[in-house]
Length: 143
Image (cartoon, rainbow, N blue to C red; front, top):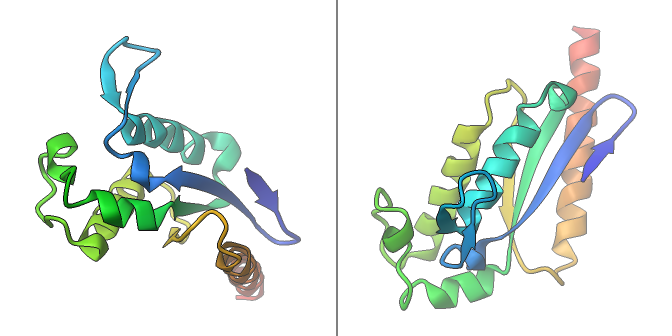
């Protein structure tokens, strides 16, 4: 979803973080990969596209409570061997935040949050981020 404000825009990715251990077939290579890797490919393409060059990327990791519950019985390092945080929820979310951040090659502020799909905090956070984007763009035009 891309939202455009008066002075800036943001592209919002809703990522079901609890599906880190689910597999899908990569349509380009027919390789079996974990679902979040597939999402990362779409994210990388979308946020680095020339059409998104002025947009601020926002990643919302949803289903965080299910993710927290799964960490002990389905280790992240099975799918991501470079992960070293064990079943620690905060370390795992930060790991994925850094993974997504590393895919973004633009110069805009990168936002990432986690929560539940039914959490009304999502809307408040997105409004806060949208206001921040507008303020940043307005300040750039003044300076």
